[in-house]
Image (cartoon, helix red, strand yellow):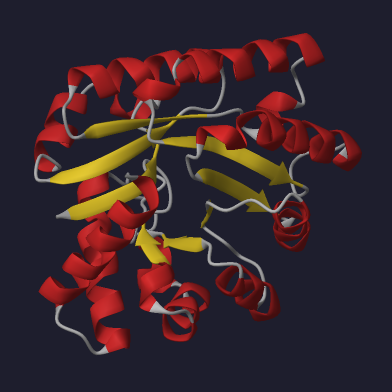
Length: 245
């Protein structure tokens, strides 16, 4: 069974044909991630409507910067209240490329992790322009379950992720990205997962992405690891089961 551990099925680009998109993904599991309160509500609705869609609730770092401390606390309480209905916590993280006020971002992320780690669910982490800082924060907080999505950090930091026993999810742009191909080559297969970040990060530039397209990533992993695609599917599904279930 294929798994997409990070997508955004509540995005407006899926508003006209979400049923068809999920029908194409009917034989796989897709974890759709919330980024703010409205998005979290929509993600929960999708997971209740479609059996193969799982929910991940979070506060995207750029959204968090627009929220007050009270609003952030309310959303944390909302996530706690819905903990039995979710598979993971995210999308959370740091964004030093697009977001200002690094100190506040670090404070918010630390608060989210400290408040929610007891749920024992993986944190799905956005780390754009803050790869090293994100890894350091999760190390300092001694977090057990972390999935770094679309991780662009250098290989000294990738090695730290591996040494901590965390996971890296490989997006479909691996088809045209030497960086992600190198990650596949260097990181143990037991610490890899597949994602789409759909509707973004498609294998084909300019094309809308969707969960079913993880098959493109499977092909690349199979080629680089020199293991049959069916066996890769089994291993990656086992990785998902071990980490999320």
